[in-house]
Length: 431
Ligand code: BES
Ligand code: ZN
Image (cartoon, rainbow, N blue to C red; front, side):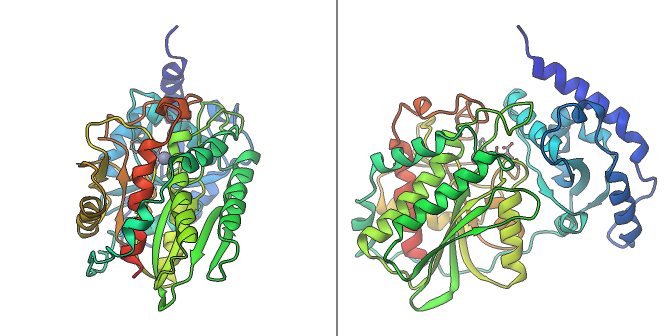
C-alpha cells in the first residue's frame, strides 16, 4: 500500500534541487543592497523555474509566486518541499524569500499536512516587491483600552446563537466539490457567501456586502460592512477563510468539502451576522465581516486586504480570526492561539469567554503563521485566533475529502461556542 505521496515528495524535492541550482544568484543580499537588478533577474528567471515534475500536472494558470518563510520554519517546510535546496532570493529579519510557481503551492500545502501532520507557514505574494515587505519586522499594534461593560446587550444576543443555523451553513458550503481559490466552484462558493450575507442583511441600510477581486486568481474575498453609527472610521474585523483545498494533483478537481476547515468558521461568522440583524443591534464603530479567498495557498487574500488597510491607514481596532471551530478534540472548549497574535487582545478575549460563557479556556501555539490572523499581525494590527482544540489534538481530516460534518458528529455544537464568542467580541469592540 504505502504512501505514494511520500515517494512523490521525495522525488519532487530532488527534482527541484536538481532543476533549480542553476538559478541561484551568486550574490549575498542584505537590506542595503540595490534590489532592482535582483528583482529583474528573478523575474527573468521565473519563466523557466517550473521543474518538469511539476510541469507535467500543472493545471490552470501557472505563474511565478514569491514565498516568504520564517527561517525557523524552513527546515519543516523543506522536508515537504525541498526549500533548503532552493536559492534564497532575499533575506532579512529572520525571513527568507524563495521563488515558486502557483502550481507548486497546492503541493506545498498538501505535503505539509499529509506528511506526518507536519505544518509550516508561509506567505505567498504575486510580486517580489510585495514579498519584500516581509523582510521588515512586523510593526507593533497600537495599545487600546479593552473593556467589558456591555452586559445589558451581549447575553440576550449570545442566547440567540442557533446550532441548526450553523449546521445549515456548513452543509451548504461543504456541498461544493471544493472551494479552491482557482476553481469554478471556488468562485461560486464565495459568491454564495456574498449572496447569503446580502439576504441576511436585507432591509438594513447600514449594512452592505462587497466582493473583493484579487489580481492573481479568480476567487473573490467577501466583505460585509456594518457601518458604525458614531465612529464609522474605526473598524473591527471578524474573519475566516472561505477557500478549501485537498489533493496532490490539481486542487481544481479535488474533493475538498472543508467542513471544519473552514466552513465552520464562516458559518460561525454568518451566525453572528444573523444575530446582529435579528436583534437590530447597531454598532457605534464599523464592523467588517470577511470571508478571505486563497488562505490555503499562503494567506494570500487576507494579506492583500490587511496590507491595503495598512497602506490606507485604516484604524483597525482589532481582528478576530475563526479557522476550524467544529472539531471538539480537547478537554477545554476554546483555545487561544498564542503566536502571531496580540497578548493584550488575547487577554481581553479570554475575559469575554469568562464573562459571557461557561466554556473552558485553553491556550496553545500553532508554531508558525498558520492562518489569516498572521496577515493582520504582520501589518501591525492586533489579532486574536480562538481555535477548536489544543494544537495537535485538532481535526486530522482537514485538507482531505474526509473533512465532512460527519467527523464532528453531524452537528455544530462546538462551532456554536465560537459564534457566541464572536458576538461578544463584536459588541464589546464596536461600542
Ligand atoms: N486551518 C489551517 C491551519 C491550522 C491547521 C491550524 C491545523 C491549526 C491546526 C489552515 O487553513 C492551513 O492549512 N494553513 C496552512 C498554512 C498556510 C500558510 C498555507 C498550514 O497549516 O499548513
Ligand atoms: Zn483553515
